[in-house]
Image 1: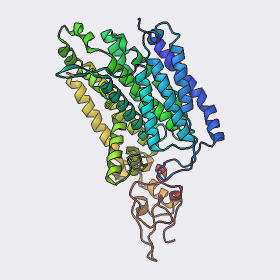
Image 2: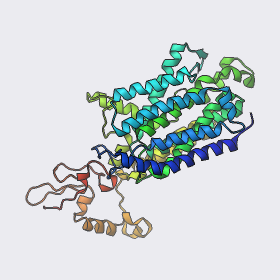
Image 3: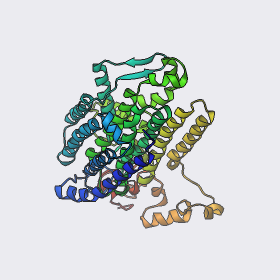
Image 4: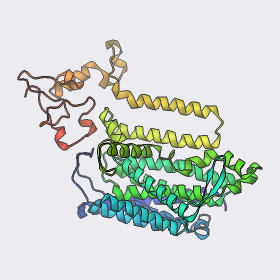
Length: 459
């Protein structure tokens, strides 16, 4: 099989184009069908927004698979493997479940059962983990029951991780696109770097997944015109999991022995940086997985169901400390790209100290950007001409006067009126007299719509 780089690019472009073109009609259909739920307390958008964006993404998936099946090189993937059909079957089930949830709402346990059924359907058609490489031991063959349980667990974890992180405009689709790009590099290297055609299905899945996300992003960036809903978040989570299952459990490390001239154990040792990130895609979607784990621990600690919705996700916390909607999304993009592509670089040359130092330096930059709203800039008068207007004292005073509050209230302090009433800073609920945490303001779109009404000092 040749190197079908152009065919991968064509498949990606067709998938992105179909997804993009379908999203507009799907938005009109969602509005007509009433798939526009009321704004909840944990939502961060201000206006009711239609869902069902997963319909367009599923159309892009079908179009990508159809085009790839007729291309000269990629059609061999369909002839030699049943994995594309297994993916389409599982994706169809999970997509249908998501559409029902976006329109009428589905109980969390029912959704969990549907996710397990979709994973089981893929297992029955051959998309399952057959063995796993373990450092120091070698290849461990799994029994059918073990392979099925591990496959179902991986699918359910990945789907819910992506679903949990879908809380800001463009966040889930952008992070999964980054993960798919890194995953494509993994799979492509294993396929052509080691000559293993068993990695071809995973490479195709990653290219199609990138197209689905890229086609939907223009409609979903802040301010979003449509949400992907569970029909989209569960779908892209399943596609990502299917690629990880395909390349981790189907590629036999025995085939790498000749490349290293050693035993099977030595081959596994030599390819640990390649396989470990794919065994469970913790590095590829590390941020969603961390959010998932923290959410389960937080809700269980409070005595709530792990599936109970709240406003404690990572993106909510970024908004609470003062980041704007767009900045919070880009910060999440940055960390996802750093972890995912850092793993790619490590898999290529794990012994390079420059890679470690670069990742450490970028991590430090990311921490500074993350905590930037915590620092109140105090710009000297002589330097105000060299800084953005928002850091100038005159600009802050003008903003305070326009908001009809004192500068102390703008900085997050709570002023006490002469009558003894507590006046809230902008962003506080008119019915509530509780102090508003610093950093919460109208630009972050935190909480109920009633929080955006103003109350004058001394009213």
